[in-house]
Image (cartoon, rainbow, N blue to C red; front, side):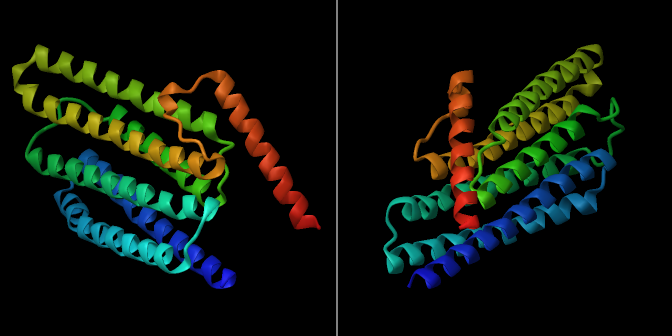
Amino acid sequence: MRVEFNEELRMIKDQILLMAAMTEKMLSDSVLALKSQNNELARSVIERDDLVDAKEIELQLVVSQVIATQGPVATDLRRLASTYKIITNLERIADLAVNISKRVLELSDVVYMKRLIDIPRACELAQTLLKLSMQAFVHEDITRLREVVDLEDEIDALNIQIHHDCLAYMIDNTKNIHQGSVFIFVGSYLERIGDHATNIFETVFYIVTGDYIDFNDLDEETIEQTLALQKKINAIENENLTE
């Protein structure tokens, strides 16, 4: 029974990683479409949303079935129940990528008021944050907690910078109001994507420690305690592997 259960867990993890890859590709393509004003690419992102939605439903059903048939307890139950939140956050990231793509279509015939720099940079940071969170999920390792917190702060700062820059262009020329508003929306979408990626890492934190902490409330002492705990876990696992 344990071998079967572990195989089901592995299959679920593989499918979540597939969903994450689909979502990350939608994110990168949506911002690439915005930067290059590629309507065809934007439409393809919008169309792919149905695939992500279907994967979310499929995984919810599989996880529910495993919980019902295997009756997991303690850490196993925490691990399985937490997957609901992970796939929900991935689905919401995909939705926000769709929102960005829809904004691309709004600006299809517009000459941009400025070269896009901060938006693609925010997208790169959001992708990095998502990758870190998914790596933490795969290995159940939260040693990169500090990087996650710093990345979210960087994305937040870029969102503020995008907002300020666009407002300046809109004040300077009222013809820029529409596209300036669109770019502000895109900045806020990317900030929210960063939040969802961080939520995934918070969920992994819960899987590993049994405690759920809003990273906005983290202080230096909590970060150090968490990293020390993860190092102990890694040391124990390494000892078990060498026995």
